[in-house]
Each structure stands twice: as C-alpha cells, then as structure tokens.
Image (cartoon, rainbow, N blue to C red):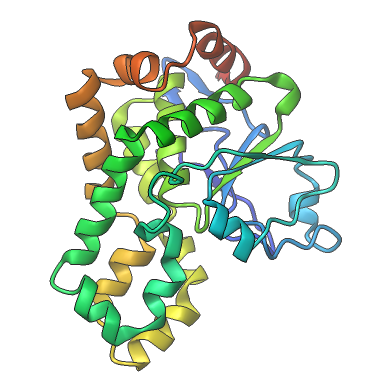
Length: 265
C-alpha cells in the first residue's frame, strides 16, 4: 500500500511527500504539492538541495509559541510562514516537549513509567480532536492547503508525527482515503523517527531509562490514531460531522482541496 514518499533531505527530519497515496477508485494524491515534516530549525537552504527542489511556497507551523521561540523555523527560499498552533490551549502536553521528556530518565520513569507515557500521548490525541484551539488550527491549515497560490505547501510540528500526523490523516480522509490507508501512512513515519531520535534515546537508555517509555515518546502507535478517530466518531458521528461542525470548514474549501489535490490514475 502506497504511503507518503520520503524525501532525502539532509537538514529536515521526517520529510515526506503525500503525493501518490491511493484514495480508491483510481485516484491518488497529486505529487509535489503537499509535504509534511518535523521542525525546520536546522534547515540549510543553501546546501539542502532536496528541499530547495520542492519549491515550497508556504510553511504551516503547527507548534506552540514556546516551541517556535526555542527552535525557530528556517524557511526555504521565497517561502512564507503560516502559524496554526494546535496545542496553544494545552502548551505543556507531551508532543510539545519531546526532547525534555527524554532528558531525565529518573523523572521520566516517575511520571511516565508503567504505561503512563502511552496514556499521556493518547489523551493528547483526544485534545487535538476536541479542543476549540486545535479545531481553529486545523481549519486554518485546511483552508491554506486549499489555496492553489499557497502550494507547494509544507506542514510540520516538532517531530512531524502527532499534530502533523492527525493533520495528514484528516486531509487524506477528506480526499477520500479509506481508514486502512490512513492508518498505514500514519504508522509509516516510525523508522524515520527512530533514526532521528537515536542519539537522545541512546543517552536516555545509557542513563537507565526504560526502552518502553522512550518508544512511546518518539513513535506513533496505532492506539493514538484510534483514540483520535474514536473521539471524532463519538462527538461528531464521523468525518463529515467533524469537518463541518467541529472544524467548521466551508464546503467550498473542501471542494477546492479535492479539485487541487486529487488526480486520476
């Protein structure tokens, strides 16, 4: 099953092109117009030719104000920034402090051991679906992605897995992807995440940290997506209710997304 294609960037973590993902009935996501990644704080536009070749016009930053201050994006040439803060209502939740969670193995065991790390992330996924602030951010993201003048567009959070993962899942479902395809693509980022966080995880484990805690922090799990989908179904009765009544995305925006991002073949 086709998932987002990894782009071999030298200075951007977890960069992927959603183009080519199958949507059913001989339809696919258009290539070269929609990308996802981790933060761009280490981007070197001058030497990262893989990124320069994408011709990014808009970067949508899903991070909190603190994250943007600690690790500001370095933008591709001629790109503009658009902030859509998903967790501004809950700035201290786990996805907004990945590296700090790995910095102290003793504290991590005290606060995250015994399965609590996975619970913490699962609860954050509920917040990403149910909180008004997250809804406003995801609506802004979708409205921006629907604008042809904004594309090619890159959207990201810190690692490109949680806030970015749900953004990609919602967009793919809007375009017609079945949930099995969404799930496959959601989980496909894990190899890149393990590689990106390998130095921090090694240090964490050398300090006596629990491998299970580390994995729950740096990876995405099937349960995380399940929690988000369940919240969507329980509150709004499925995707249509979520998009129209939860996110309040106008029908015209949905039409532009499908017209601009779906191709046959």
